[in-house]
Every structure is written in C-alpha cells, then in structure tokens.
Image 1 (cartoon, rainbow, N blue to C red):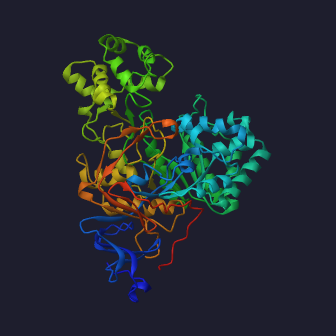
Image 2: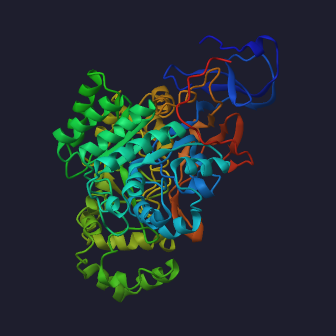
Image 3: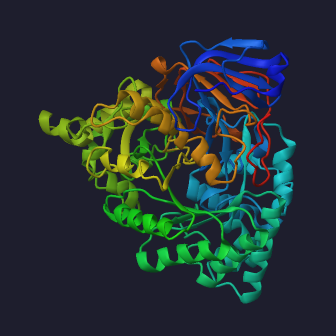
Length: 586
C-alpha cells in the first residue's frame, strides 16, 4: 500500500505519537499491511512508512492496529451524566458510543415525570431504579439541556445521543402519553417541532420502540407501542425539517406488511437513514428471512435502510446474583430471594429446600421465567470461558439425559458453584438451530450493521457489550463449527460502517485527517473473560461486567486512555453534536 504522508512529515516535523510496525487493519476492509501510524493532536496525520519521529513512540510490532470500535446501540443515558468512564464499553475497545436507543432516555422531561422515565428505563433495559434515582441529577428539562449536562462532564470516550420517543411523548402529553392515548394534531405538531429542535442542537437521531416485549418496571407497555401513523409521520417530518439525524426502530413486525410499509414511508418522508433491529426468535424463526428480503428490496429501491444485527446469540446469564434463573418463580425460592448472596447460598444447600424447590411447580405470574424450565436444550454450563456457539450435545438437557437425572438437579448445582457467583448461559435469540449459521448470513448481508451490544443495559441478565471483541476472536480466529469471516471486513463492520451509518464520518478509519481513535491488539492472546457481577453503580447496585485480555492500548483522540486494560488519567472523550464531516487529509 502506498505511504500516506502529511505535509508536516515532508518537512520533518516531530509527531506527538507514532505507532511503529503494527499490522494495520485500517477499517476500510482492504488487505491488512505492516506499517506505522503518526498522530498529532487528536488526528491521524500519516499512515504507512512514517519517516519522522514522535515525541512518544509505541512499538506495535506483532500487534494489530485497528480503529476504535464505534458502537451504535448502547444505553448509557444515565451513566454518562454521573460517570466519566463509559465502562465496560471503553475497556473493551470502544471509542465512540451512541445512546438513547429503543425509545427510552431521560430528556426532554418535566419534574413531575422523573419517576415515569426511571420506571420506563428500569423495565425496558433492566437498569436498577434505585441507581438511577441516586445517580441522575435532573439538571435539565429540554433535550438541549440534557446534552449540556452530558457535555459538562469529561469522558474517556466520545458519546452521541438520540432523542427517545418515550420521553418525548410523555413530555408533550403527560400521563396521557404514558398511558398510550392517541396524540392530538396539536401534540403531533409539538413532537415534530421538538424533534427538529433537538436534532439542530446536536442529537444524532431519534429512536422508538414498538415491541410488546419492552415494558415498564410496572409491567405496562411502553408509551410508544402502537403509536399511530400520524404521530410517526410528524416525527419523520421533524427529522426532515432539521435536514439531519437518523431513525432507530425496534418492532415485532407482527403485521409485516403494515409495519414495513410504515418503515419505508417514514424513511421517504424524513429523507434520513433508518435502521431496525433484526434477531431470530424461536417463536418466529423465519421472520428474519422475510425481513432480510424486504430490506434488500428497499435498498434496491434507493431507501437508506439498514438492519442492526448481533453477531452472536442474544444470551442471558442465569445466576443467583442476576435477575433471572429457572428457580426464581418457585414458591420456596421467593422466601429467600431477598437474602444476601452468602445467606442465599447457605439456604440453598439445605437438602430439604433443594428437594422442595426441584419438586415445586412455578408460580403462574412469571411466564418468561417459567419458559426457561422447558428450554434446557438451550441452557449451558460455563467453563473457563463462555462458549457462545455451544453444541446442543453439551446442553443441560443432553447432559441430564446421558446421566439419567432431572435437569433441575444439574441447574441447581451449577447455580451454587463458586459460592453462588457462577452463571449458566442461555442463548435466548439467534440460536434456534443450535449454531450460528443464520447469524453468519445476517452479518454478511451488506445491508446490515453490527449492533445490539446494549452496553449499559440489561445489567442483571445480559452482557453482550463485548460483541466487537467476540467478532474478532470467534468469527476471525476460533470458530470450529463453520467458516470463519474475513478479519479486515469484520473490523470495517464495527468501525467505518457503523460510524457512517449514523453520520460520524470523521472516524472509523486509519487515514490522515481522521480522529486518532485506535486499538492496539495482541490478536493471538485476545480473549474474553467470564462475565461477573460488579456492585459499582450508585447505591451499590449491580451490573454484569466482562473483561478482555489482549487490548494492549486504546487511544482516543490521540491520547492513551487504557493501557493493558488499566485506565490512564486521560479523559479526551466529548459529546458529539450532530453529523461530523469526512475530514480533509491533514
């Protein structure tokens, strides 16, 4: 590859930082090559053979050099107002995250609706309400005020925000909005105006949810489920008025014709890109195929549509520390559910309680938890690391059949392992056939985007924030149950592709003029650790975390923010306001 030089290099000027001799996987999808990367200030100024010297140089020989991950589907809406570190995303190589997905967030908001938005976020994204009550300062009302509050706090990585439909609807309609009443023409006009105002102020897009799965902490449907066409069209006009922003969409697509037609129409009205969530659910195992067909046709018709897909199962971590496991709904467990972990483990070691729990029928008011009891064929023990593409013959059901025991016996023992700190893996979505072949087809479709990490959300049950790392380790190196994916294309999918999908055209590529957001990775030893529960949210609330070995350094805007997994003092991250133009080379 030709050397890319800046004017400064021709003059022999010293750089701030030079990365020497690494395998450059630059985010373009082109063949990797060995070379150097020179950085001055927050920008890359030369890539290839760098002749000049740096005030600081890092020996990258034997390391892979990639852009930082651009994660477009996270839920750090509360955390970024109280915490400078956007963990665990920033510890796993992300240098930019987009929040405000799935129509939930904390602005705009009136004082009397604070609790409503907390209950909404707690229910939809499984973020402890107590932590949100303690952590949120609520020093904002408008969406612009919220962005200002985020901007005042320095961060380790960049953050972009979206306008959440749920908060907007409650702000305009009050209790009627929360109760899913139809909006009046005047209320639709107000939502249109506020959407445009927020986009002009720097929101990167607008998000909504229309799925029956998303519910408040009280079990009610979210305010936006079933929102009428007139309301959605008004919001699409708001994006058109602003002439910017993206649309993020979650739906069950229960009425495929009606819902997908609406998606197409809103994209046409707004003139803005729209992405929707696509997973394979066991109850509708072939819906993703029909969605893919319609997506491909819409793109062929010239519409800027994409589907956000996950590169592995959307998996639950079942454990005594978490939100869910098969015994949660058993009557005898209810009596000890609130005990501290050590006391809970001690109680569960009582043979009498064991016999009672295993023999009991579950309480009927926990339909989701109870569904786990019939799905031991999708429940797996976790060894030294999580196998995200486990063989059906290694399932709890298969092991129990070979041993001639009740699967509940195996689950019970597994939950007590490591003094109750252990987890079982349950691939809830994207694993109907017991492998990742369908996922491979999804992620290799050129009209899909790498997404759905849900960083910051589902903290008691899901830990998919490590998806970008998994894409490299599993799909590009370790997979044994099917073909591998190309490394350069996989890096591009979660850097340049995701950045451009949301209008962040100044990042995701190692080239002169682009932001110096870089990962130095020891690919041979890149490895995900087992998820574990940390108690570091406000009030000591819990959240699932996951670490990785092999990230030698993560650089944000030219500053090393993590070295060998440990944070530095640098906090160069900013609130990104709106579309960022593709840079002119330095």
